[in-house]
Image (tube, rainbow, N blue to C red; front, side):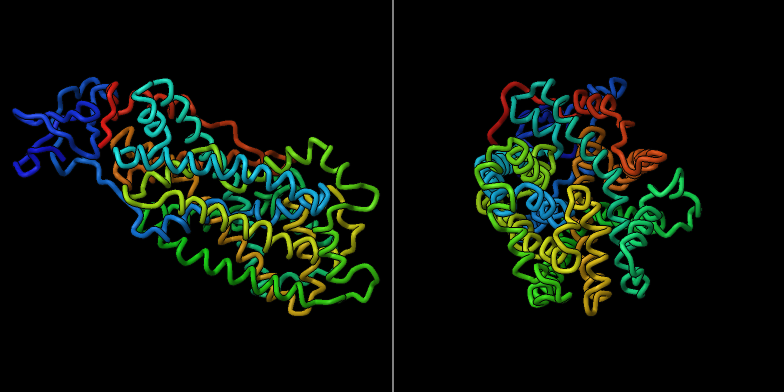
Length: 483
């Protein structure tokens, strides 16, 4: 605030960063940033907004809240399903060399940079990627256009991710009610085909709206928008404080069970040590460590896994970090969140998923096709739980933790779009959630192809997003105040 903070300020005209004109005097307000509505609505140029129409700034209530929220956005299906398959496919323990190189040389520095950019713009009143990009570059319109693609990308990700989230919920419920004793790999593959819609042309919609897979997807959709409607503190932070500890407890219970199974089938070469060896030995039969490291695909897979699992490069971390307070320790918060993600990925998932598959299904089952994300999660592991004592209990815990991980990730892909609508159009939280709901529902309804299963919808609207970003109400002047 400026020197006139003690005076009555009945109305404010938004002009730009650091200059907010009110009656006869000029003062800094809203983190040094003031707003100009003329660029978005020319017909309303010069309209004076009352204090009640000022945008309300949200901040994380606690530092542990933002750490858990960012960790939750990173800890998702990629940690528990994609990473174990990638590690087993690219040399087991040898894969950890390119993975950790990418983690320390790319992942952690980029995460620090995103946290820094987010807080820098956040204390100046900007929470969306276009606003953040434009703020840190001194008001360049082109950077707002660049930031708009982050918003477009996150809504596209949500549009197909929500279906996989629904599958996790459906499988958890089937295990809870004892409906997963199918008995053969073929039946589990058939169940996955029915759940995902790949079984036949249009099979997902054959049962109408009462299809269990669609019902679970609708339930996940409603849960996500309920949480995002409640806001950063009462929605995202509140849920992550409950979901992350629950996820960790479920995963540790399953991990302990897997590591204490011994040799459940009695078949030589399928004991717990054999499973751990296949997952973590630095070389596989017929391939040395040096041969693995000479494969450029192993390095590409390691870097891709780091970017995928840490949610780097598409505006989620920037947006979350923009809600931090000025005195929050973002270096420590970032390091803690990144380390938490790495622990869930490399330690828990790496020790749990592939060793369990080796013990019950054997090494021959772990082909590249079966080591894919969907092959591991929805076909290999249900076979494992089918043969495991108390398999229904552990199957429920596993898919429930996948569901929690998926929700914490999916809500993080909604917040960048909500922030853009609130800033770019001065919409209320309720209106922003309504618009975002209609947009993502449209994309989600188009995210299934007839016979090829899930695909990323290309019916995004980058033109609208970038138009809002470029003509945003937060018209930034050349000199950005340091607040």
